[in-house]
Image 1 (cartoon, rainbow, N blue to C red):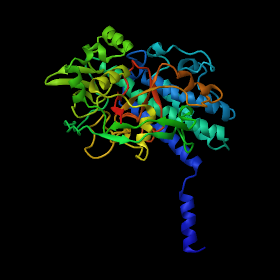
Image 2: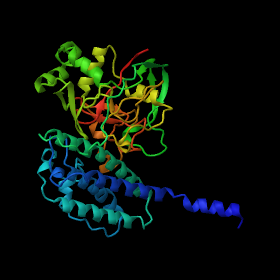
Image 3: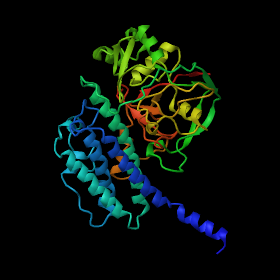
Image 4: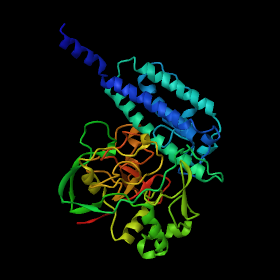
Length: 429
């Protein structure tokens, strides 16, 4: 064999197959969940601060149950469940699977213990390793891919939910200390990029993983528009507060106005008056608000009111997708290690499209033309939530690396704000 042939053979051997890459990503994802839980005590991991949040222990067990229920039970011959009772404890919302523990009371699950959950994860991880020794149909491989992305979603939820818990405590503990701190940055000047209108294809094109709600790809009329170069900053939001934004009824949708008055909202979630201005609870502990960083933990109602106050509007999800075309799908996500939004770089063009904060759009979360949920229980993953929610784009500082795409459709109810949610301004061109 010639040197050239030897080199080609070595390259072929060194290049992992799609199956091996999937296996490696599964192992990395499962390991990351354990790493995210490592700074937390078992006491930290059992409590939920509010109904929307879930305990860390529950996230670790639920993502494990997902693989057990949808992959191992179907595709690993002779698989024995770790504990049949766990299905009731750790099923989330899959009605077709069976009854489950009520979401608001997940923080009451002191049993199974933290040790039990860690043993459960080890049991399932071992079974997944055994599974890869078998010939697997495409259905199994696709469900493993879905399980990886499902666990990545819960990794972000784990972080935002522990922030919710720590923010409610008098000691204001940090999830992870920030040894270097974060000096206030300079605010990149607000500028707008104009985009021509027309009929454009939107939605996932079919190459690589996507959730079912990202398709089918279809044509969409988009009128000429312009989009801000960066997200709205804390400094701009403080100006909104000081100008009476939370006291001016004409800025608010009726449901939003009722909500902020009923709840007494006068600032983003976790904002508190502090010496020299405001502080905000973060995964790095209670910190002075950085004026240049993107505002975060705001609801759709707040984002919409701010945009109206500023003389602009929120972009549609299709405008956002159109504007992000050609941009690299990366930014300051979880791997950057900041664990909070950072100021936008000063430079031409659009910045912060991926990472830092999820960006509210003005688009209701609805099915695309021709959408059909996946068959079986996994069809409950997205489709049944297409009512009364709004689409967010772009990912956040807590989103696992590689998890977002320009077609990714995150969605929350308009009152929710415990996630890393912010906004970017848009206008008709």
